[in-house]
Image (cartoon, rainbow, N blue to C red; front, side, top):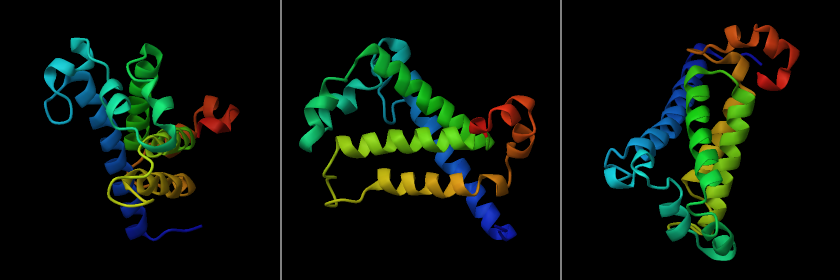
Length: 164
């Protein structure tokens, strides 16, 4: 599939923008910049990056399952590592198969936690971001402003194509 230069740049802007959303969530929860996370609730200040959302936001049929995960150490670590690695991978355009799959799974779980969404009976930003990630996965070899070609030429990635 061949993309025009304009579409390649739109893909790059979407990839980098969505990467920044993931990376910013990580940084804000880590340091508590006071925008989404208060400084006293930052992970580095002893707060839990998952307790606020998982303890208070879940609704619907899966609420109890998500509530039990709030503040659990391994969930906090997995969530924060996921946010950071997905964010960096998207911004750099490397490991797109893993990043888009992991990001889609994380977004799907967050959507399931708030099912049904507050402002729409079905659709919310989690699903839209998930669809953008899936589109980016399918265009990863065409990515502009990316380290993907250099990444894909590494022996490790050639030996293990799932890292592409």
